[in-house]
Length: 283
Image (cartoon, rainbow, N blue to C red; front, side, top):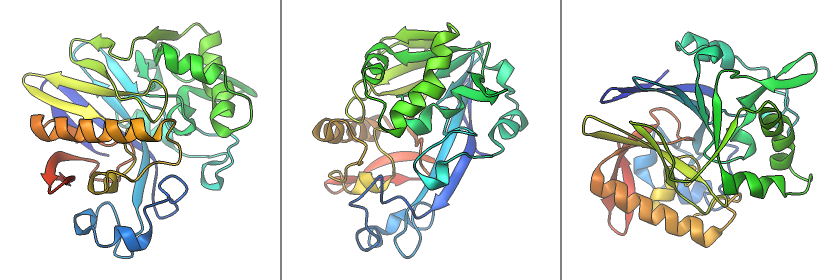
């Protein structure tokens, strides 16, 4: 379990899945042959054969006034087309409680976007019904993001996830629709990082002169810092997502804010530095 301190704020990572390999479905250009020569990815983010190491985890942000969960992973009991994500029976809730954050203590859930691996623990199954996992929380969703996914046909995992992991919290009256630059509290605000989805956001944490950025999916893996052209197969606007990555890397390199990757394997966080025409992560 990893923790970072940003001024008066503590950020804790709670892992649902961490794995090596099996990621070509999301980063098709990141072949083993192309990844292996990017030596700074070894050993934390890729193995010697060029297989990517990735993670699905939530980040708990404890401020002096709020307990915020950023993205809620895949979830148990959910039917999904990706075999390793289908009908999970994991220990996420126990791990969350062991980290000091039982679900009833969470007052805010931030969804950076509404893809299947970011909303799963919004709900849990109780007596064959999907009920909110965090009953005392307000679930924050960018208004345009919600409108887009409500309009999608019921023909993919993301729309299925909307039905079992978003609609129940809407029905419970727990969702607040917000602007993509919404200020959550004194230390935490949303940052528009469009492209991966229509209104994707990242999360900025700033306290006592220190700063961190939780990425969401404006990038999936540090290899995209070395190869700015490598897209995600799930990007809604491929060129828009590429521009966002380049702009965010340049900003992070300038500010030296800590970047915490939503899908980065352990150690998960580092500083962005320029590396020729590209960038790398300095741990």
